[in-house]
Image (cartoon, rainbow over all chains, first blue to last red; front, side, top):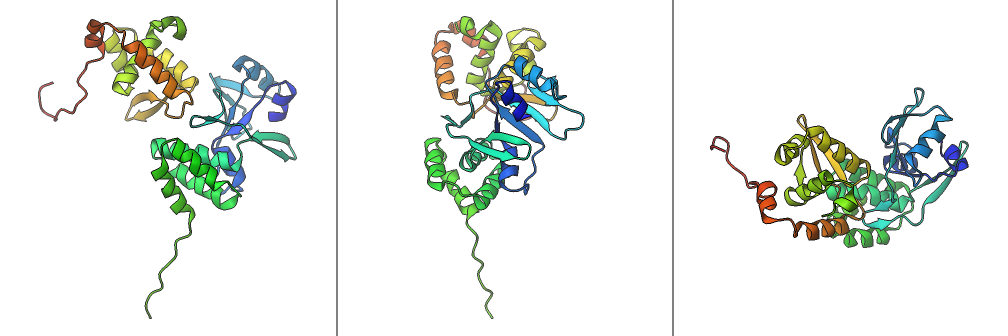
Length: 169
Length: 109
């Protein structure tokens, strides 16, 4: 899908839970593929029709044999109030995809935890942090800049393996 | 006030509403502004499609709020607040001064 979009000059950055699935080797499985694109919905719809995807509502696409729910989220690509400047490029047997870096994927999940107290999102952020090399100091800087320094501490604690006290003999 | 920028007066009213009350549902807004509910729903959908508002189901009611993850929210709110200051008092009293503090069940409304 992303190859078809690219061939037609349409950018598409994979964001959201699907990045968590990729970075955790499907420990968390997302049924949604959320993309941020600067293409118009008209252009995107026309292009995706070539490979059998049909527009189901203003920004959603489906194909009968595809288990994923495809959404094109309105640009800009951002985490909190900061733009995404360094997306990752992943090459698979199906082609290249642009997606959030592991560090940005964590920020993306933490934003849901920070603003909506979504503990599922916190768990997903922790999964990525445990499975990938991420820039923790950058996540801390961003969290504080967004005004969530205290909640960041919860994330940090969740990432740290708890030491178990030995029972007395 | 911001109609020229936002495209229509309904979306301006919705944004003022969310600024003042922080959340709202289409029928409630439609009743207050005395406009058809589908007009409100249409504009809320447009705002949601563009990431400016988000919604959640509470029972059978879809509640809308500003999207705290919208990257320009601070700037947008500043603009709406600035414009809201120019809303005539009569209009503010009519639409934007509804009781928001709690009222115990059983008391006459």
